Length: 179
Image (tube, rainbow, N blue to C red; front, side):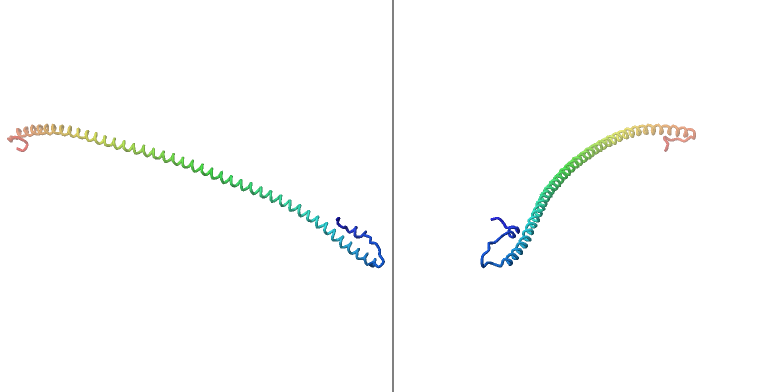
């Protein structure tokens, strides 16, 4: 059954009967119905338009929400990628620093070993030098003692002969410097 419009109500004609309703009252009442029904019809049409507008806005908002969710997901994904990249970069930097630190430690140990080796070498050289100096001094000492021994003998002879000449000259007799 089709819906009635205000025009349908206004154009409706009733058949007349002998003891029927007062035609004027019915017409007035129908006019009131037409007016109210027309207002309701217009209000209904306006509400339907408003519903369509609101549905359109809801659809727009849903599209915006969907776009915002996609943007948020992309932002989260980008942030996660940046975090992961930063972690990888940090790991690389740490590994490079560890490698560099190990190189420095290895170089330092190598230099330490070289210095310790040089110290041992210098100590051995010092010991050899001391032994050589002792031997040289010992040799010089022996030579000096021999030389002094000769000189002492020569001095004694020289003193004896000088003493003997003195004695001869002074007329003292005796067999040596003491007597």
